[in-house]
Image 1 (cartoon, helix red, strand yellow):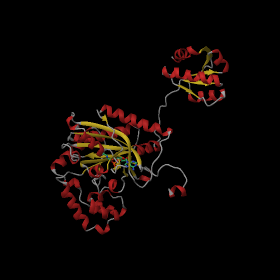
Image 2 (cartoon, rainbow, N blue to C red):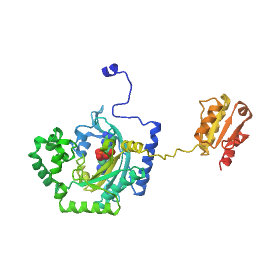
Image 3 (tube, rainbow, N blue to C red):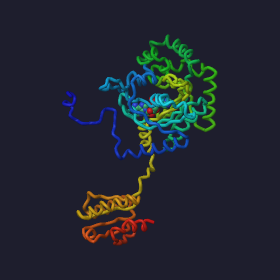
Image 4 (cartoon, rainbow, N blue to C red):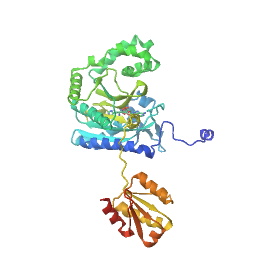
Length: 428
Ligand code: HAM
């Protein structure tokens, strides 16, 4: 309350944003491309509530990850439940998979989604506290072909959106067979260098040693470069799986770069992890999408042991890149007819005439707020209407309408109840 009195400005919550009409076309374009791709590859759409039991996210994403320990939006309900706003979709989808016994449906089960997520991050360019993700998840298939196909789907979507300079980075972080040994190796290596690590890495070293590899701090880079690499320590199964993922990617000609330091910020991954980047302003990289395999998560959520693989992309980041790369070619629906009116009675007639056109699926624009005929004809011109209908006081009294061909300037007068049929004919 006191804060509001000091700062009477009414504004959107920090880190969040409105999506104004002029930006809706980007969301629609992305949604269209994603849903078409989902249909083609046989994914069914799923929606889950934006809130879940807080515990669910801690269990799924990992209590010591930044997403859970620093960035969760939590709320207490009047009934005393502690809930969390969804910071990502994979955990709720796994909850839903288990709850609805989806392992009994034909496998692999493929799901996709599109909607907002919440993370209490420090607001900065391309990092929001409410952002939209779309994603694809495949359950019940352990073949590496799925890993490659998920990467291909995201690569294709970004290509279809006409984005340039895409980089796919890929790594394997092993599984419960080989990762514990590698973690021990890495810890031993880092122990003698702990004093040279940045403050964040000192913490990561204790809580989640693999995350040290993800550090962007200058002083940690030489330590990372010299560190043992997990790819050299994968067990046979993980090694073969990873090799096959890369072979599939070669086969479908998706270019990729091996990044032995890619570990991802969520705890549920096993084997393949990947991210799709683009070069952002100033040469830094911006992650557009990320994902990987999570073969143990369904079981962790008390489901039947079910392998799974998926990824998600950030919609705002894609839009910011579409704008920066000036991706155009949005098709606005074409206006076929403009309805101009003059005077109160004409307005009333126009309202019901407009309904007739809507029922006949003819796209009509109007400008009921304007009373000057010149201004209305100018607008008709701007919108590129083929025909303009004019109803003035006299026409309203006579029950007629003037139909003007905007190209030739030719005008006809027709009975108002014949207007739709005449326009239909002329449009042909
Ligand atoms: P993630 O890497 O945390 O993965 O998020 C995926 C994408 O969401 C990022 O690459 C980025 O484009 C976008 N994103 C994340 N945080 C923000 C933010 N604060 N502002 C704007 N965009 C953001 C996941 O969420 C996993 N659930 C992906 C997954 C699905 N793994 C398996 N299946």
